[in-house]
Structure formats: structure tokens, C-alpha cells
Image 1 (cartoon, rainbow, N blue to C red):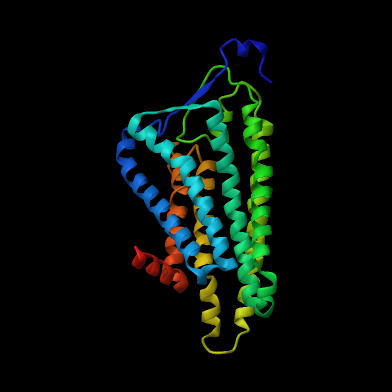
Image 2 (image 1 turned 120 degrees about the vertical axis):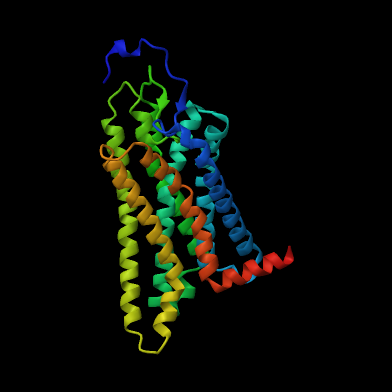
Length: 313
């Protein structure tokens, strides 16, 4: 713990976000592609949600789960990107104490909610391919409702201590966050207190949630692959795999981006500090922008639904 002398300065009431501390001249150039990606992500996910809502043929559990993923993506985008663009365009670097920790909570909980949603979607595809006769009785609207409650409750409750622990720390002097967003490590290292438990909790909780989801996803797809290889009817195996191809692409991309982000953070001493900051922003933009596009291109029912929606307009 910090000594009493460390608290002689007034307590911190707000933070200042300094994006790309070594390359601030990049900010205006970077704002254009980020704003375009933001508009693409919001527009594509909104179109997907409206299509699923208006098209009766898409009122099925698989598409309800996809709607949940789109909602999570939109909330993540709205939590992070508008503030980043406000810093780039209007130099609005200050962020209040409560908004900072609220942003931290949403980022931590919704990231793991996405991972958990992918896990539920993998189970949906496992039942559809490995137990097709039982699919209508297992994957029901009630199943989706219970799965949604589980996704939200599990990840919100486990992630809540991260901002709470960080907010309870003493911030007595430095208030400049060398990041575009209020990540736990960027904020907590400004504290005068010992942050060991804070960092340990986030590490254990984050990797327990993400790790368990990843293990179950791998098990689901292993069973799917095993079942598909046993299919002898010509063309049936390809058709079965195509039903979960879009989902697998999204999981692979989500995991790859997350893995790159983790590696760059672990290798901070060998990589310029601005690189992890940029990757963190892109992680809240690129998957949300690509998820609805991949499904829209690869899923015939959604493609037809979007075409009907556009004709009505």
C-alpha cells in the first residue's frame, strides 16, 4: 500500500486520454478510416437486426443468436469509438471518473459475452449436425432466452469486480492515461496503491471465461468434423459444413485478433506502445464490421432477407 504522504495531492476526479503518445500527428489521418469502419459496423449490424426482425423466415433460434451477437457488437462500438473520434477531431481528452470505469466494465463484460455467444452458437451447430432429429426439441426459443440470460449474467457478474477494484484504488496525482480507452491496466497503473490483486483478478477471470468458451467451441467443432467425415452421401458433407462455415470464420477471426492483441501486450518492451493501442481500437471495430457482412454474404436466407428489405425501401 502507498504511504500516507502519497495522498497529499487532491484526489483525481477525471482522467485525460492521450491517444498515441508518441505519434499524435497520426490522429487526424487515422480518424477517417476509423469513422468509415464505425459507420460500416453500425450500418451493417443495424441492417442485419432489422432484416431478422422483419423477415418471418428468419425467426429461428440460430438467427436470434446472431441478433444477440450484433447487439453486443453495436454496444461495444458505441462504448469505445465515439469517444476516440471525439479525441481525434475535437481534442476532448477528458473523461469523468464514473464514465471511465463504466467504459471499462462494458469492454470487459461484453468482450466475454461475445465469446460466450460464439460458444452457444457452436453448440447450436453441434446439435443441428450431430443430432438433427432432436434439434427442434433442444434448440427452442426458450433455449435462446435461457442462453441469453446465462451469457449476460455470467460475464457481467464475473467482470464487475474489475472496474470496482480499479475504482477503489487511490488516484492521488497522475491522471493522464496513455491510451484512447479506459482499459484496466492503463488506468490502475496510475494509482498510488498496490494493484497486484487487481491485475491478477482480471487475468484469472478473463482467461477462465475466454478459455472455457474456447475449449467448448473446439469440442463442438471436433464432434461436428467427426460426424461430417462419417457422412457417405455425395455432397452431404459439404452442405453440412457450409451451414456452420460463416460461424467458424467469425470465431477464427475473433480469436486471431484477440491473440494478436495479447501477444503485442506481452511484448510491450519490444513493440512501440502505440501499436497495442491501435490494435485495441481495431478489435472493437473490425469484428463488428465483418460479422454481419460474412453472414450476409455466406447465408442465403439472410441475403434474400436483405434483398427484400432493400426492395421495400
